[in-house]
Image (cartoon, rainbow, N blue to C red; front, side, top):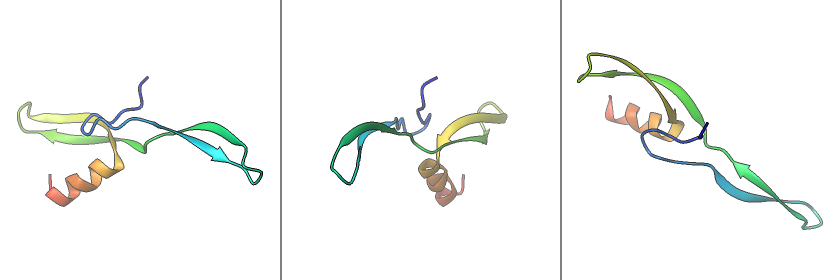
Length: 64
């Protein structure tokens, strides 16, 4: 299963965990995905999608 936002297309990010002795180990920074039901005017029904929290915030800002 791909951890990707359906609206924005955001994916996981690669990074490093750096210890006190500066030893770097790889880690993956996952995006904050949430399942949300959104009303579709075209289909006249609720659609359940996986969406990141930044996109949810912008939807609230647009009053959708």
